[in-house]
Image (cartoon, rainbow, N blue to C red; front, side, top):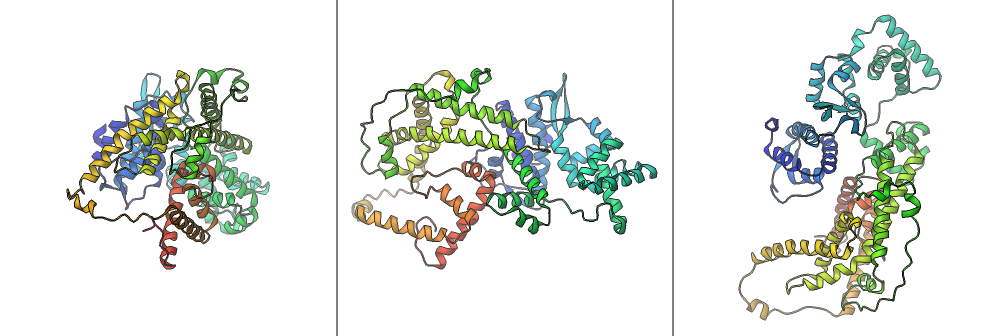
Amino acid sequence: MISRYHHPALRQLTEQLRYSPIDRRMEQVDRAEQLLYAVQEGRAYPYQELCERITGYRPEKYPDLRIDGDVLRHDLRLFVEDLSASANIPVEAAAEPVFTVEELSREYNVSTKTVDRWRKRGLVSRRFKFGNRSRVGFLRSSVHRFVEEHMDEIGRGSSFSQLSETERTMMIGRARELARQGFRPSEAAQRISEEFKRAAETVRYTLKKYDGDHPENAVFPDAKEQFTDEVRMEIYEQFRQGVAVADLAEKFGRTRTSIYRIVTEARAELLAGQPIDFMDSEEFHQPKADSLILGPPPTVEKKASKTKAPPGLPTYLASLYTVALLTREEEQYYFRKMNYLKFKAVQLQQQIDLRKPRTKDLDQLESLIEQAVEVKNFLIRSNLRLVVSIAKRHMTPTSNFFEMVSDGNMSLFRAIEKFDYTKGNKFSTYATWAIMKNYARSIPTELTRRDRFRTGSDEVLMFSTEERGSQYEDESNNAQQHQMIMSILDQLDERERNIIMHRYGLERGTEPETLEQVGTRMGVTKERIRQIETRAMQKIRRIAVDDNLDIPGLE
């Protein structure tokens, strides 16, 4: 029931989201579960940031509200269960195997009351449709994660205490045989669990306890503790940055094979958890869709663009007016191709086995995502002129033209993601509506904000002096500032420098990229990119202060 929530803000958020589209709801459920794992007790979390992590949208209300970690963990667990219940998903349609309470009880040889206690301790449950009934279920990945974090507790409460001495001796003897054959502890436990029909965690706990009690005769004397998710991601990031596997193996005390396995598993988790939205179409499900959709673009005769760029535009915007606009046929082709590539990526994403991911599948998935991003960027570049045109029409005496272009660009990015090309409409019509709708909201809000600071004293403006320099001086100042910024970036490490360069479009001929785009480029989550960017900006400010550099925007 909704009344079980400890905080009314989380209860209200659940009620709001239960009316969103089903696929969107399930995406929010997945995000909430991942957020739950990151929450720490004893720490308070800003409500606006929590909403953004779950929904992708940062609300304006409750700017000062913070929720304690213990309350948040409790309510997020309810959020996942209640929102999944509203989706009414059949258990057969789940993305991975689902355990019921009874099945989990039998798997670990514990009572159903113990399973309920595990739920209160953090085991995440969802609701699925079993026939005509809605029942609690547990995703295999959720169970595995809980077991890994509470192995000792589960071992004490499971069938370990009910193993006979003979069975325990046979397990240890079989483990020795597997250890001599080169099996790792986790692999040996899995093999033994299948042979003895016991839960893998029960076997793992049995072997671990035996080695702890008999260190002089341990089955796996060199066994090491499992890495945390943070350490595994650190290994993956260093590998992506070019650190040699041999160096990583020496630094983290693992074999080269283990490092390769950790890198592959971390890469699979990131790719499998990456949200990919697309517009589905019947064309995608045809037998020869690849040859029909991924072929060369239509041949269209075009005349060179004769439209002159408005005066005063920076070079990168003025250059847009030399590019011919896309025809309706070309728009159809590129939007169809972008969405089909995403469709194929999602199909492959659902087939990835996180326990044994194949490098070939991961390479193919990354390639599909990169190709889709390339097509999207091409569509963005082909329609940036539209943003400039609309921004000019909505200019007011107090508006900043470049801020309006930047704001319009964000609307354009969203419009490209949401445009349904199957309806046959021209994209410029849809994008114009989206950009103007955004201006209709943002411009009145900005005017209202400025009204608060108006004095009504026109003489302030009449007697103020304009200190605008010449164009040459402006360009010279910009060049000097750019040179100072680049000199500061040289003092950052390579990863921080690359993120800042891509985020702010500091390389010639490039555009600023979103957190998600940079994350895709570097193989990490957008939240990780945000953290590194924040750290890098703090370093930049510190360097600027130490060197007494005056760079606008770094105050």
